[in-house]
Length: 452
Image (cartoon, rainbow, N blue to C red):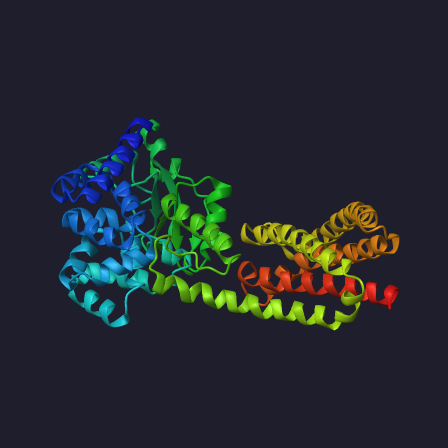
């Protein structure tokens, strides 16, 4: 296992390569890249502006590219792969693990994918085609076919001799999989048990048969939750008939968890989780412009509400000063609830049976905070403008908006999720519109009643 010192050394080398690139010393940089770990090379490429990326990739030896490519983001992978010749892609297929090759092919145009598959050997083509038949966000899309299987009737001594015939075993192999004559999964045989068991015992005597395999069509987020709950390093994947198809390893689950976290974070701002930090202007601008346009529409809706009460604002200028407070407090309160609910949905905590309790809890929190901060704002407004009525109006408006925000923040993501709409993406815009409209409507509406 790499030590902290090794990691720090790789970071130092990465910085040195970056400095060499800036100074134009490409030959020295090529030599440094040869000793840099694959993941650090990928990190160096991703953290460089587009022109430097092309130079760095060109400096990476062709035989090392298959090691570096899996650590790159999807957008960069596609960019580099599209520039490769078919022969180089076919060579990659023999060096990359099945799941990594499938991830790359899924990003390519169908025509190019067919050409690459056609150029593969029959065995490699069958292996990759089988994995390609499953959706990317399922267990089948995550699994690898590099499993070692044994039969229950064999002795541990036979299993050990079988393992010694291998030059190496697949990475992160913590279990062997026990199957019957029809290749149906019946249990696992931990390597740790093999090492400490009597060689004369049979696999059946020491295998674990109570392990549930993962269905091939299970969504990847549910797979990740199972790994989290069970503390698995790897897990078998089976089809609807119980036949062993492959396995999923923890490194793939880490990718799923990271992608889900990126999705939740980036979606709040209307951005794609694959958004590249150093993406060119021509790609970045349209993505952000669309979201800004949508927000502009919601801003016009809020402005239209304010316009309805223009006469009241003209009479009492203090309303224009105070009304952002009501909308802002509602927006923050709603976002707090929305974030909690979206996270709960993402990690599988929120189910049908506990939604009502959660909504009531958020409503109670909203009411308490509404009463507390309404009192604070009421006193501040009354003293500031020497107007007790104005203090009462803003207090009432804040109570209305904070309670509305709590309910909207809880109910909105649940409703969107039920309608198969991503609550992380659509929830924030809808919530902002609701809290702005309700905040302005309640504050200016009450002011119109009292000051008309």
